[in-house]
Length: 119
Image 1 (cartoon, rainbow, N blue to C red):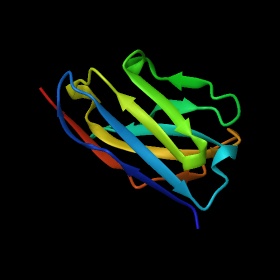
Image 2 (image 1 turned 180 degrees about the horizontal axis):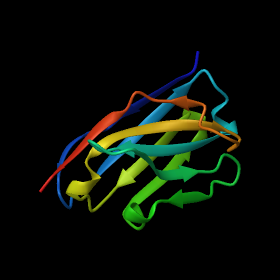
Image 3 (image 1 turned 90 degrees about the horizontal axis):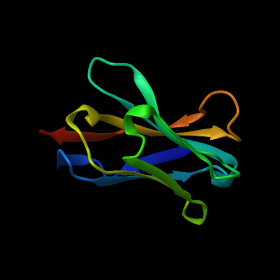
């Protein structure tokens, strides 16, 4: 049974930082590209950042480029999202997801972690 469990969300003031973690179980983590998505109230889910399963190359959506950093620790089956210089518009539920070898759709999703940025 595959599980992705996010942690590290919470309330932070604008300009602050936090780090989200997502720990996976039940899969060969090293074979999965990992992504962080977010969904703000009344909006669709959007990809925020992703990290390749083999090269470790990364992608960032324009709104977070230069402020967020995605990383992974394969021995710990964990992917991280470091968020700096947070803005109120970063408020959303953040989800991690796993994509087998980076092919096709994301196969597995976490339950989500709420991030609220106050102005």
